[in-house]
Each structure stands twice: as C-alpha cells, then as structure tokens.
Amino acid sequence: MNRLQLFEQIKKKQSYLCVGLDPDLEKIPPHLLMCEDPLFEFNKQIIDATKDFAIAYKPNVAFYECLGARGWESLKKTLNYLPKECFSIADAKRGDIGNTSALYARAFFQNMNFDAITVAPYMGEDSVKPFLNFEGKWVILLAHTSNPGSEDFQLLETRQGKFLYEEVIFAGQRWATADQMMFVVGATHEEKIDSIRRLAPDHFLLLPGVGAQGANLEIISKEGMNQQCGMIINSARSIIYASAKENFAEAARTEAQKLQQNMSRLLSEYCK
Image (cartoon, rainbow, N blue to C red; front, side, top):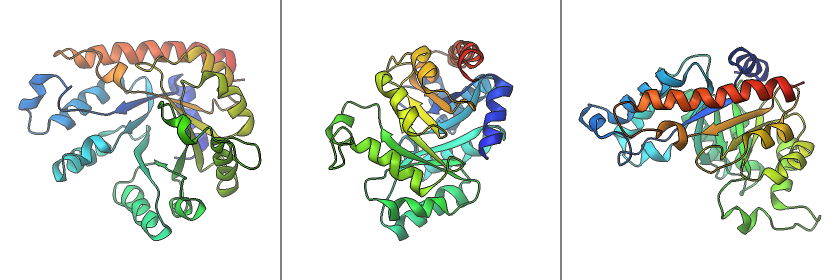
C-alpha cells in the first residue's frame, strides 16, 4: 500500500485509527478458550467489529510467537483475515546485522505479506536498509517510544546537541523518503509532537498511547497532522479489552467508533 492509498482510506473512513491485535490468553474472554484457535477467534471477532472504523491493524508479534508454532499459525490466519483495504503492521521491532535483517524482511514481507514492520535503529543504517528493498513495503522506525524507559537512551544528547531520538529521525529521512518510512512516536509525549512534526514534516507517524496510556487525542492531532493526515493512532487495550464478557466484540466496536467519531471531527479541523 502506498502513501496515497493510505490517505484515501483515511479520507474514506474519516479515521486514522489502528487497532492493536495483542491477544493474551490470560485476558481474552474465558469462553473463547474452548475454541480450536482462541487467538484467531478473538482477533476475528475484533476485526469484524472494528473494520468500519479502523484503517490499520497492528499485531504485536510477541503475543503470538510466545506460543510457538501454533501462535505463528494464529498470526498468519489473522493476517489473511484482515480486510484488503486495511494497512497491516507487524509490530516485531526487528533490526540486526544486514544479512539477518534481510531474512527478517523476507519473513514478514514475502512470506507473510505485511505492509509494514517496526524496526529498531540502534544498530544503524546497514541493519535498516534491507527492509527498504521491498517495493510497496514500509519501515516504521522506533524514534521516541511511549514506555518509561525511553528516557534511558532516547533523551541522551549527542555531540551535535540533539537528542538521540532526533538523530534517529534525521537519519531515517536520509535512508528513505516519506513514501517508505514512518516513525514511532509515543502519543504520551504530547509536548514534543509539534517539534517532531517539524523535524519530519512529510512522514507518517505511528503513535501508540491513546486509550489505556491516557494520551490526549485532541492535542496530538492538532500538533501532529499534516496535509495527508500523517498520523496513525494505535489503540489496543482500551478497544480489545473493553469487555471480558461474551459481548467483548460489541464493546470493542463501541470504543473504536468513539475514537473514529472524534477523529472525523479532528480531520476536518486540522488536516488542511
């Protein structure tokens, strides 16, 4: 999916919502544990309930690979079930020496056919470039993440007087254009969204943290939108775990619809 196609979906659905598909066997409704594939059944119902409001889905690979082969099978079935018009993100946070990254890229782009993958930039350019060798696929580079530990390294100042996360954003723009590179920026860093947008005026930002982590959708939308929206807001727990009962899918739909309605208003105000 290219940038224009992604923007067309945003306009069509009046949404920039990404639903995080992070199913935990200890948290999904107990009645699903009787199913042959509980993770897929949970994801299937969540997708059916939210597909009218979401433009993207982001499975966190850890929730699947922890279960071994059957978890990978659940992930593959989930990916195949996603609506074709929705952007698919493998939240895998890969990044290794070049030949290893090339194999990670082949796994997620060729064998599984995700549209995008999250990539850790710590090992530098040669660990990221192999992911950029696939036409129509996206690298989403970890820049300033939402977790508390992000301050350990991402806020260190470099010899150039920049924060380390800023250097990552500068480097990412040298490695790829806005047609193939996005950046992960925690929505909880509301005070930094404006400056980050100025660092990367054209690139899409993937922003986790709205929902359970309490980020303010209004503020980050005002500070972070560009003329093609330029934002994908990920929400997982507040949607997929809105209810632990048999009505979990309906509850998820209600939460996704609330976000979409707010996003529709914000698009009309700030995406100009």
